[in-house]
Length: 136
Image (tube, rainbow, N blue to C red):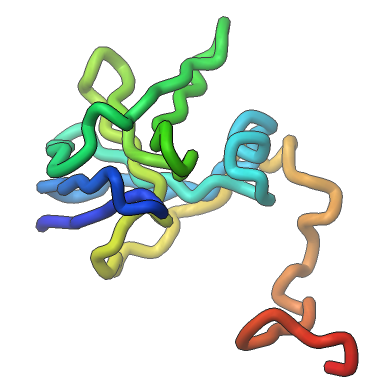
């Protein structure tokens, strides 16, 4: 399988060749901080290859001190990008960074003990096609 991806400003483009073994929605406090959301959505593979097609010089990696938490991002727009972990043996890809269609569904939620207190029954919250107006 082959997947294409990019950052928001399109300064960085990449290709992933191979399959993803796991897809988790991570609620740990670190993933919530670096995603700015209820959870991160990350794909994991020990067999896929990450190939930078454009803008590799804009890719930065941040490892939180004294943890295994690593974040790859674009130095121009700040978008989350893939990174290599475990001495290069694990490719971690933020699902939202893919431009290609992804048929794999999440395998589960992890680190639920760190879940945000407002992250409950979100399927019951009103839904809109675009930003709502005050008069709805």
